[in-house]
Length: 124
Image (cartoon, rainbow, N blue to C red; front, top):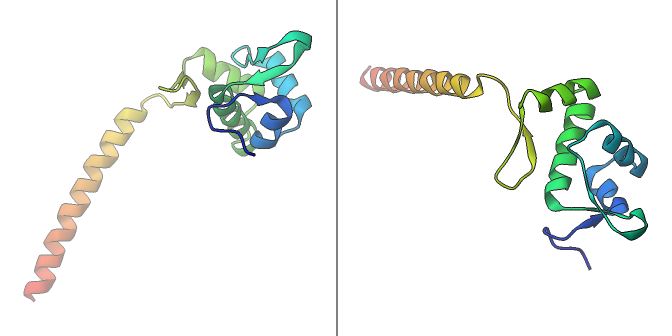
């Protein structure tokens, strides 16, 4: 039976879900102070749902985007990795809100131009 989305994961379950080996997760704990799974007696690690999301983001930054460990550490220090509503980290970019606003304005301008062209072509 599969665990629910709010269930804690063991290191073997987390490594399968994230797509990295268990030793990689242990290594990341030594490099990223913000990765801190719960540890029970005997040192067994248990990852909360927010830990899984954070690990997924770190994996994406390191493996998919090709960033270095130092880059990810600096992103966190500069607060460009922020905690979302669920407590998981997410990457942000300086000026992202301004860029989004400019893109929305440009999109509105293009939609207006398209409507004018459609009307002009319909009347021709």
